[in-house]
Amino acid sequence: MARTYTRRFALSGFLDDTWKVTPRLTLNLGLRYELAPPINERYGRMYNYVPEFGKIIVANPGNIAGYDKMVAARGLQSKLAPASDVGLPSSLVYTDYTNFAPRFGFAWRPLADNKSVIRGGYGVFYTGTALDRVQNALMTQFPVTEAGGYSRLASRPDLMTWDNPFPSAQESLSGFTGGGMDIHAPTGYLQSYNLTVERDLGRGAVLEVGYVGSKGTSLPRTFDWNQPRRTIQSYLNNVSVNNTRPEPLLGVFRYYASNSNSIYNAGQIQLRKRGGGGTFYRISYSYAKAIDEASQPSGAGSGGFSYTGNSTALDPDNLRLERGRADYDRRHTVTAAFSWQLPFGRGRRFLPTSKGVPQAFLGGWQLSGTAMASSGAPITPSTATVDENLGESVRPNRIGSGIWATEPAGKRGVDYAWFDKSAFVSVPHCVSVTAGCPADKYGFLPFAKGNSGRNILDGPGLFYINTAMLKNFSMREGRYFQLRLEAFNIMNHANFRLPNKNFDTLPGGFITSVAGTGSGGPRLFQAALKFSF
Image (cartoon, rainbow, N blue to C red; front, side, top):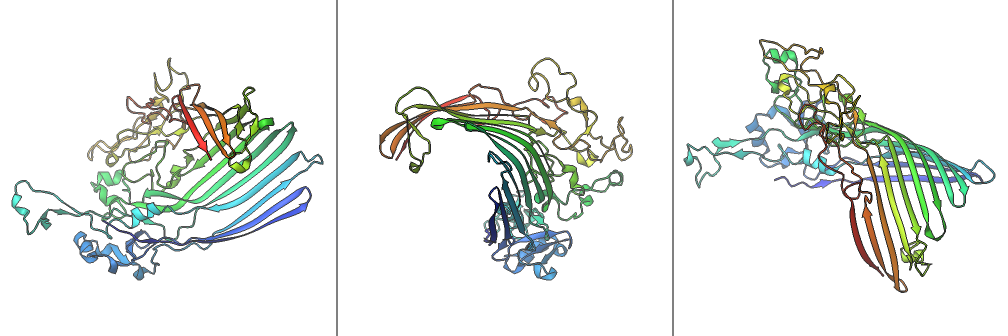
């Protein structure tokens, strides 16, 4: 068991000034600086595989019990070195001192009627570090802890005795199952920008049209840096798979880098209106596109692009192959919200905002709700069973669009596959060392990466309406009961999750689950009674 004592501090400061240039133009200027040194382990029980040195660097081997014995037992003396030998700090990662984040915003009323406002802004925002990822990958495995095991030998029950319950002859030692992190990794940051035009239409109605965008740079990602580099030549020469790794002695391990990028652009339009008595409505539409190389730091993804082992990347030498639509990409999105004081009931009096319930209506019933409709999340067609040792790839080759030209009869994703599975073929495999590795009928060769991209098809769309009715019953000053009746997905519209991503199996392309409650799942009614005081 590894007990870690992680330490970290962060400093930040900012300057901000609002300048009213003219009665109609206001500027906001700011600059923020963030200093966030990497994590330290109090006793130096931390390691990091550094490709530049070709070694596992340990912060302070002297504080690791049995360190020399553990390393010698695995024959890895040449692959480990203390941080002091290579000039690395105790955190094993250099601090990024360049985290300056400028901010700018403006608001301008161009017309004399003061009913139109143009607003815009730009800002840089830095990411943090997920402490659990660093702790699990760089502090809890060999060479900090012994992670071996013992197995029995049925024909030799005498091997285990009271004096020697753990015989060394039956001990199996784990390899290096930790990870590495870029020692010069810059801090990830997001540039966010927007420009909107807002117009007062009168009678409480406002129309807003705008553009919103962001660009992520140096975002974190995870992949197996030591993934085997298999080739046709290595297969024909009978080179073992492990010997095609850059570090054959170390096996699979996760590497944390800050080289993922993202970009998001959206055009938005919104109409909102507030009436008397707390009644209002808002409806918004967004046309957007989101592209990235990793939607999560772990490298996993809801779009179905999971790989064997810990690789989470098709090719560690060409991470740009992961560039595609983000898991959260939705081309079209419509949202709406409303609240209506029903024209019946008594006691049309409002609780003051100082009581913590602004616009709470006493006596009468209030109907409110939200609605959402969006196009589907992206999905990555994949191969179900892969033998990478023979040259196959988890991503197939694409020979068609994957979109049905003429859909079969029935319900898509239920009676027939959600996508056209015939548009994909598996990457071929080598027949044998003697028979060779011929191309398939489309000219595709074994050990080539499948040309089908990440998140290339749309999954099912989403539509639901959630509603609520409430009534407040006053007892005395500052105290009241609230009765609330709610319905989720009141239309009971069927909203499905992504279908099975495999193109080469019978269940492939079929839907097997529905959305969760509150976000498009099966219709649900609930009632609640709340007492506020």
